[in-house]
Amino acid sequence: TQLLEQSPQFLSIQEGENLTVYCNSSSVFSSLQWYRQEPGEGPVLLVTVVTGGEVKKLKRLTFQFGDARKDSSLHITAAQTGDTGLYLCAGASSGTYKYIFGTGTRLKVLA
Amino acid sequence: EPEVTQTPSHQVTQMGQEVILRCVPISNHLYFYWYRQILGQKVEFLVSFYNNEISEKSEIFDDQFSVERPDGSNFTLKIRSTKLEDSAMYFCASSTTHYYGYTFGSGTRLTVV
Image 1 (cartoon, rainbow over the protein chains, first blue to last red):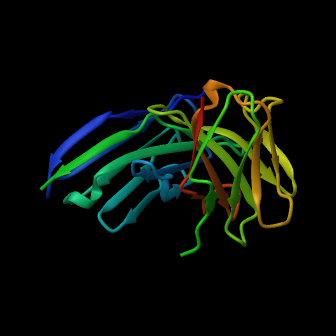
Image 2: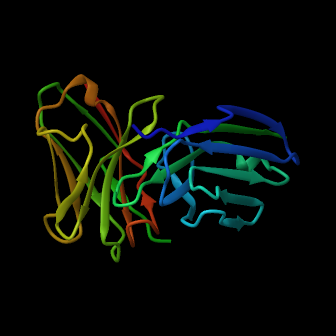
């Protein structure tokens, strides 16, 4: 069974601080996505990475896919209160259409 | 910005009744999906649909579940005889390719009583 573990589970930081959340698995993924989900809403896609070692930047967010394509990280620089939310990673293996979702990191950025 | 539309936003049904959840995917997307999220738990894959047929389904997607794209724009999920444990948020998603361009709808909250 494929599992994606995210850490930390909860994170509360002050506005302006930097943070990194992690997504780890023992399985290899062909594609990995990061989402943000607000309460009562569907996940909103932030990024898709498909190449081992790939780094993608989206404004203050930096996403990295591990060389072995088993793990990923999301780094936020100078967090803002608007970054508050549940961050989910999801991975898909080669030859499959389904994404396995991680357990999520709930981030709260305090003013 | 194009979006995936789901109706209804909330559905309450009696155990054993049939429900149909509806979705309008983004018009130029080719891949369609249903996921569900039981309160407080992970988002779980149910089924993917491509080229007018199911391309993959999970063990959750048993004979009680079916999907259909009846008219080229709507994408529906039917649960024939609902059980209490079917209570969850059901999300429809569509994508341009197998991996890229995933867009989720806002979900239908299904409550089985």
